[in-house]
Length: 113
Image 1 (cartoon, rainbow, N blue to C red):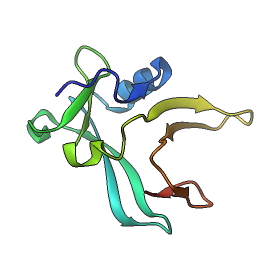
Image 2: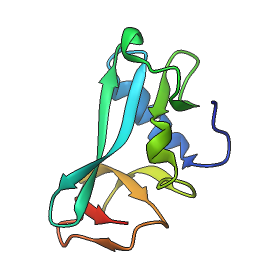
Image 3: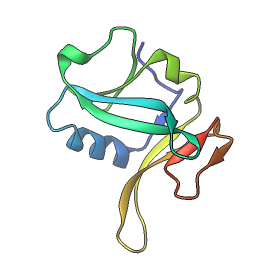
Image 4: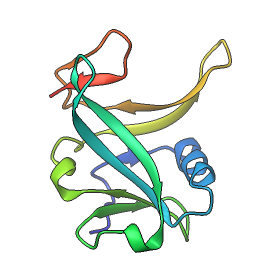
């Protein structure tokens, strides 16, 4: 199902994600359990067209590149904003701001729900 308002992705993030997809048909965003001290981590990987699961929800990044999200992870991602930011020191990263998180590890890589 195409998502329109459930997750917000800034234009900067759309451009960056489409670029890092490396010509793949898209990227898959999943929540991996059993990772880090928070217990969960966001995982973002490029995927080929033959790896697209018809049951995945998706957000169009460009005309040819989508962000795919497994339906089972969507419940934890409603209301999330994804941004690509550069801080004052010149560090660049994808920033996932998820209102469903109940905690974050000190390093900021793992989360709890």
